Image 1: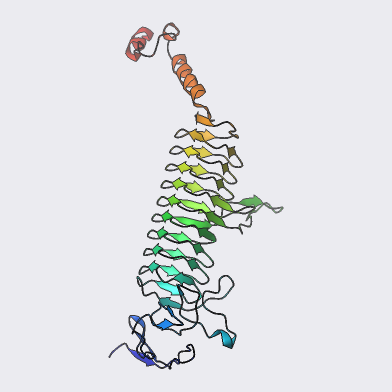
Image 2 (image 1 turned 90 degrees about the vertical axis):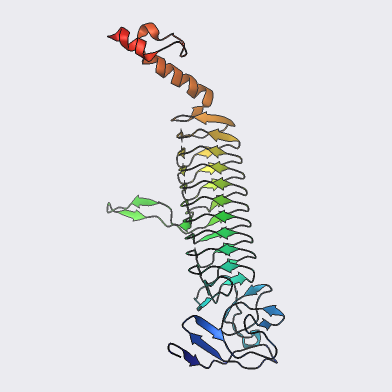
Length: 340
């Protein structure tokens, strides 16, 4: 058959298993010689099923699958060995058809769709669904029952259990940190830390979360983030917060629990916001908020004060004879006629 190359490869197995043969086709590795009464795909090794199509079989962590591992007696590292350097072989994952590095630790119930890639030393928990186009970078940890939407990119981070990351989310890239050196050039500050995302977190499409430089960026449990939200490096977001669309959190911001930020609201760098604070849409928080309540405006103040200032500003724009007229009785066309 055209395009088919048959290559013998002795598979290292637990004692008592016979040798097999692997062949490669245009659709990937497929195992054609089985051992004893093992099924054609997903053979059982040491009482646990393996999930890669092809590759050498070995001893694995319970419930997790990989492709290349020699017996522990031979002194080689077993699959799913956790962190560390090195890159294994990218092999096709049976449940979904994506590619998983042989040194990754992926649970047997996880789905990795076609076009998704899981890199070396990544950990993917049970019942996780990784959609097409996703990149799970080296040493990334993804908890159980989590869904990664199309084209999600994870690096330098961990994601908790039962999370939903919608299409285009990027987590763990370098933060925006620069300084001017003695020569007058703008140089990059090191961005070497992680992003920690809690359990039951939902992140909307095309939102970005930068990794930390002097502390980890943290997203608390049950926090919900809308589309197009930017979270800078070193930000700490508490539990059960809600960040609406186009919110921007500058570097090193700290939010308490149950904080709500309306659409397009922004928080300046190194600002702390107390728990149970609600900030109106398009507001700008430029100083610490220590008292729970509703805030609005730029700079953000207590919502009642902001409303009064808006009323006063509107009246200030009227003719002097109309400034004390209640808003319900004031008609702009009448004021225009009097001005003329």
